[in-house]
Image (cartoon, rainbow, N blue to C red; front, side, top):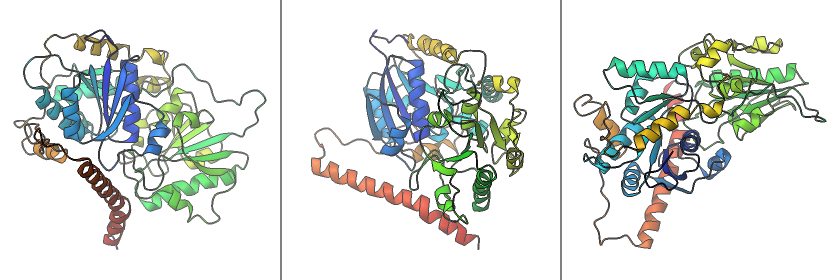
Length: 446
């Protein structure tokens, strides 16, 4: 994508969790392969840790933690070509209004604003999409998503030309066959259960899924069963994990058998040794399908919107642990996978051609229009102000707490003290969300 000044394009990515950082940074590389990447981590309950960032494995030229107001000030001050908002819908909406205020109404060169979804969109479709409306480009990960996204925008008489079909940026390119062992290597058939932080959400359901994975390992001692976890206790991802599988393992009678273990790491690395991927509704299913790895979407707990496995109706992947124990390997429906943007005949490297072309076209505008989200003080007066306030903005998109006046710079000691207090408060908040809140909820159910 050509830059306005013909130098390598500069891209800013704002992310609010480890998964969204992965999506945002990889999207930036797809849109501007030779661009410079500045990373911003939105301060909150899911701000990724150093370990999580290292596991994602994507480096930025600069990376720092910010508030919403600090990000909009940086985006208003620095000369970026593209801004990628890789955040939950409410944060995207707040940043759109904050950026609109920072850049002002006057026609002037400004970055192209891009947003989208990290994976499968199976809930809050209208809510999430309308919160993202106003970005120059709203990326859809498949043909199916693009059609649904445009239908939502057109249904409220909002412009839908911002929706551009692409693919999940972390899918590996090329047709992959089943993961056979390399010459001379001897390894067992490997089953991976891709756990999710919040699906299912009850202790009984999570304990059931863990017990069935362990039972599969005991039923098939010649197989390796890996329980792929997203985070370690105390860490947060996109969703809150109140009942980590690590804790449930300690309550298993007899513990884990020798051929069953917990694993972490990059999903792509785990899939390199996977012969069967099992999940409830994780986006990992799409990654596995793209590699032609047999994939089972579990029906044991029902096919329900709350679980997200209803998204896989017609995929050919729905199965139960009983089916898998009996040796079943699901075969996906090619028409379904093609509509989901995986395992298609089109090379994955070409999936972002339309998005790159659209961003380049918008970047060449001499006088781009101001950002125009669907939600305004007129269309959503009872909804929008609360969202903006949650991220530190007033109803006009102004930061609620302006920076200190010129000439009143903080001392190094005060900055260090403020930073330490902020980190302590953040740690206390995480402890409350992860430890205290679940206990209170369980006591309330007695």
